[in-house]
Image (cartoon, rainbow over all chains, first blue to last red; front, top):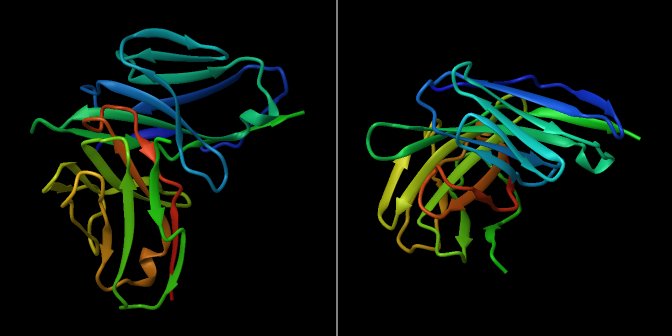
Amino acid sequence: QKEVEQNSGPLSVPEGAIASLNCTYSDRGSQSFFWYRQYSGKSPELIMSIYSNGDKEDGRFTAQLNKASQYVSLLIRDSQPSDSATYLCAVVAGTGAGSYQLTFGKGTKLSVIP
Amino acid sequence: EAQVTQNPRYLITVTGKKLTVTCSQNMNHEYMSWYRQDPGLGLRQIYYSMNVEVTDKGDVPEGYKVSRKEKRNFPLILESPSPNQTSLYFCASSLFSASYEQYFGPGTRLTVT
């Protein structure tokens, strides 16, 4: 069973600070990594994807991937109250049968305090 | 508007009464899947479909059935619902496979008494 681990939180940060969300995964052959944001009572929506080691920046969001350490993180700069949500890490690995398995972590709840 | 739709959004039913939750996407996506989300357990995949007439089990398929007779539709069938199937269900679709961005429907909250 492929595992994706996240700290459940809640992670509380003051408005304007950097929020750092972390995720580890068990399958060393994992190929694709995603961060989804889920507001309470809503469906998940993709905010970042990353496929190779290093950093990927998109606006206030930066995804970081370290395949050797099996670790992926999401940094949110200048955090806003509207960033308060649960952030889901998702990892894709091949199943060896020509298809792929997508596994979600249980999510980290982020609270940005005004 | 590109979207995934699910119906019904809310459903309360009794043990053993067959039900179907519909899912439809208008993006011509090949890959569709069903998830359930439970507190403390996160999102878990029930079934997925790579294309028409091609379906496979996810992590928690017991008690569920699916079919994919048309590319746009992927209904979830509970033939004899039980209280442990009370959950929030999401349908999702993506262009080709699980390795692409998943577009989620709005969710169906199911309560089985």
